[in-house]
Length: 369
Image (cartoon, rainbow, N blue to C red; front, side, top):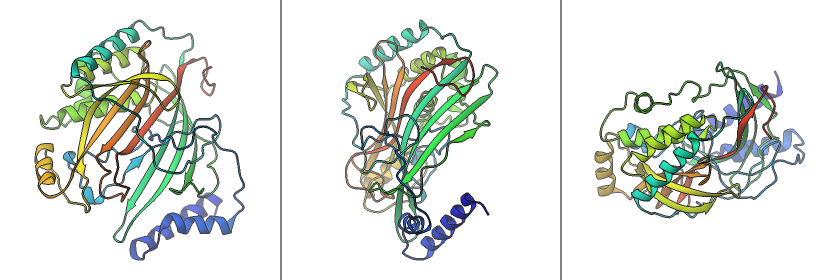
């Protein structure tokens, strides 16, 4: 049995205990790891601590706040993210994230921002290399709600991807799990290489009609259609591999949604000046207990408003006001987090993706400069 097999076996056994006994899997594994090996102090990503980022939505489930899509509040896991900027391996940072200082302007301002950014992308050069490159950083808080308690661990991930013209892709990533207080859970994960990674932008259309059809899919209910479209737009932008034409088209689709609003000029988590727009992308139970509700968003909102505090999920897009390049996607739950994760009563970042670098290179495996 390899070291990875042993670790997975131990983690599974600990989780089984947590489902039947008052055991915290994160704490239990931390004790096992501390006794089993000398973890050492490999210097992970240095940078500004406490900046939360989200994991790539293309590899994880859709956002927790979408109870309207038929999910139930009592059984969902959550993701919250933090970014720690650096170059090689990933490290966790303690504490929960603080949302960026978003504003709440008009719909007209948001449309003007997105239209201008789309036009800038259409006139943007494609670069000299044949292979599309993107580097992102994510930090996610995961909550496991068992019968007795909710337990949380956090994970910081740095991801680089290369997509060739024919669609072949390669992903390289580094990951570090930690407790919510910042204590490491095991050693930093070794560099992984995935040659089967699928780029959701590889065959995504650049025409509005075709793109809209793919974003809506089978969820053509008028009640939730705009949320589905908005979530899809943000997912495609978050990966960092969308072409300029795809980005321009996604911006125009987002501008056509009635709920989009201007969120002001701010500094993103990588220290870059950007302009943000926001849109509501979900509702959830933010009360003291979890109420199981499903159905169209209007029915869910009515039921939650009558019996519990109604929470709202808003997704923000931060873009470069000059080039129109997407810089960051941040999802915020207000006024509090969903009930299941048992998080402090305050606005909470659910997911946070920073697109650190994009460009074109000649061969896969070579970072863009």
